[in-house]
Length: 271
Image 1 (cartoon, rainbow, N blue to C red):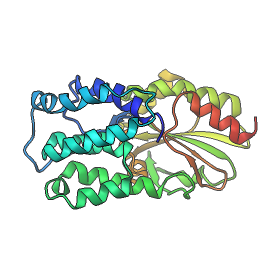
Image 2: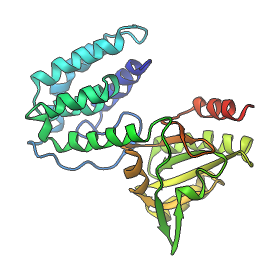
Image 3: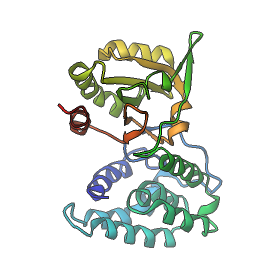
Image 4: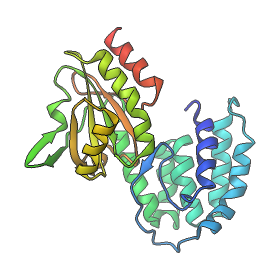
């Protein structure tokens, strides 16, 4: 799990100091509005106060420290033992989920009386299990979307003999829109009988998606009005989620961003 520490330190700290401190979302992008937890809700100030000591400790861990992830794990485990509350649930979902083996983490949660009853954690556990079933090397899971009386399936594109780069995105998602130029770039460079790009409009209104497609200059095909169909199938908690599928439909990689997108596509196409 290399370079996870750097992501945690920079992105979680930024979120901690923002108005999103109460939202249990993935570190990587935009997420749906969370369900209300059964536990008593903490205010934004209470969350900041509870989390501040942990994140002060995380900031002290160097990005280049080979034991960085282990130190993050140790500090976070100590924190949740002392915080059987919403702040502890936040750390489980947004920190330990990135530096701890998922099976080990799930067993720990199941054995804990408080965290086992947390709706936020239960939702995250479901996503972790789905992510494991749709990780690299696994066969694609099909889903469909209906718009204007027409039904489109992922299998209309994936498993048809091409590498397919699939972008789960939404018009309202800033990180999604920042990745669009990268996707347009690889599409224009490599589109053809061996490669395709597909956008999946996730948690978005079709009219807003269409407006964004025009504004951003997107020319690759789209599955409009997918809503939760794709995110439920792949355990996606935050967008963008960019996945490369092999010609036979197996998953090559998930969570692609930035320069890594073209680098992997170019490698697989032998360019």
